[in-house]
Image (cartoon, rainbow over the protein chains, first blue to last red):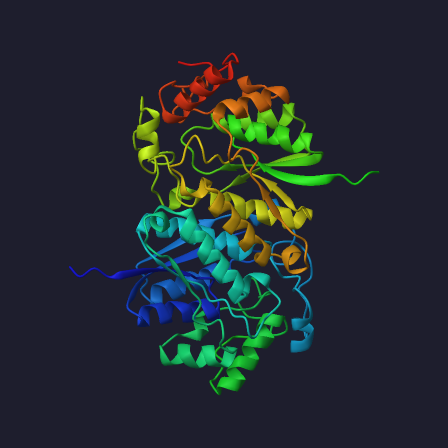
Length: 230
Length: 230
C-alpha cells in the first residue's frame, strides 16, 4: 500500500474552498475536508460543502460544531442586515460588517488539532488577499504568523516536523481562481458564495458583496456562471 | 460610571487558572471568565469553574461548547489510562499522553474572538513552563507567537490596539503559585487539578501527574492542602 500524503482543506461550500480541494488533489494529497457549523443563519453552505466533498471524493469530511454566537458580533451570525449593491471601492473601504471575530484563527486551530491526530503536515485555506482586502485574517502576514505559532504549538513542531499552511489562492483574482478550478474540473454549480441566500432553494441573492464579486469573476473569466440567482 | 479595564481569563477550574482570576482582579481588571466543555470525561472541573467564578465575582462566565473528540487523540478525552505515580523526571521526559491536540491554541482563539466583541485587550492564561515542561503550548515562545499572530488577526490589531496575552504564572513553581493565590484569598478547596477524579464526589485520585504536582506544591508552600483525596 503506497503511503499517500495527507492534507486538511478548510471547506466552506464556497467557490474558493472548492477550488482549494481540487488544487490539493492535483498536488497528490489525500484530502481531509473540514467544515464548521458555527451558528450561520443558513445551512445551505454546509449542504454545498457536503455535496462538494462527495463529488470530489475526499478521504473524510468532518463538520465540527462550534458556536461563535456565544460571543456575538457579526452579520453572519447576528441579526444585522447584510449590505447589498456595494461597489468594489465601498467593499475595500473598511472591515466588512460580515466579519466574524477571529474566525480564521478558530478554523485554523481546529485544523491544527486534526493535523496532529492525522500526523498531517499540510493545511490548505482558500483565503484571498486581492479581491477582498477587508478581512485582517486573510492577509499573507497573518497566515505566516499563524504558521509560525502552529509550529511552536504542537508535538510535530517540537519534534521537527514542519507544518505548512498553503494559501494557493492568496494572490489570485476571482477570475483566475475560476479559470484554475474549471481546468481542474470543479463543478461551481455546487458551490455557494451568497451571504444572504434564499433559505429554501439555495438561490443566491445576487446583490451582496460576495455575489457581486462572484458574478464579476465569472464575467472576467469568460466562463458561464452556473449560479442560480433569485 | 468609571470605565473598568476588562480582561478575559481562561478558567479551567484548576488551581492555576483560579489564581489567574485573583491576579487579574488584583490588577484592577473586570474579569470575563471563559471555560470550555470539550469532551472531558468528567464534568467536575466545570462545576469547580462555576463555583470559582461565582465566589470570585467575575463579571461574566461563559462556558463554550467545543468538541475535540471529533478528532480523537488524547487521554483526557479518549479511553486511554491516565498514568499514575510517576516522579518529576518521568513527567518531564516526554509530552504527556494527557496532551490534547492544539488545546491552548483553540482556547486562546476563542478568547481572541470574545476579546474582539468585548473590545478587550487583555487575555490571561495560567500556563506554567517550570513545573511541567511537556506541553509545547505552555512555553513562552509559543505564547509570544500566539500574541503576534493575534495582533495581525483582528480589527483591533489592524487599528493599532495591542492585545496582550498575560501569563503571570509562567515562571512560578507550584509552591509560589499557591503562596501568591493564598495571599490574594483564593479558596483552593474549590479548585480541582486531578486528571482522574471520582466522578460522583469530586475527590481527587492523588496519584496522577497533576495530583502529585499539586501535593508537592502545597507541601513546599507550607500551606495546608484543602484537596479531598480518594
